[in-house]
Length: 142
Picture (tube, rainbow, N blue to C red):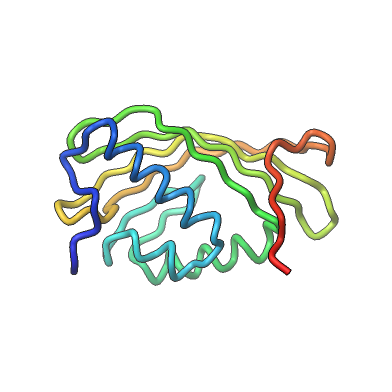
């Protein structure tokens, strides 16, 4: 696998770059693109789900974004050390009924020496919000 800079050990600047890269990829809502940031054998805990490997990540993300419409995410750098980064995040989406949700939580990431995420542990909470309570809006491409 080709290196995926920035590489660990991270500095504050390079850790923040990784966070922004992740935010950009997730906001693409492209499961294949997102999966390429992870090792082939990546381990995830996402809420109560445990995933192993890129193929499971892709299937998980396809299912996620089929239910979470107009998904928009903002990640915030929290801390780093060596090959690990911690982030806080919020994202908004609506379900098939039009109900808007804000999901928020924390992620702990561990990277391999080539800059790929080997482990991702996410704790997430959801809250119903009204249209007027949304923080994140984006323009759709025409």
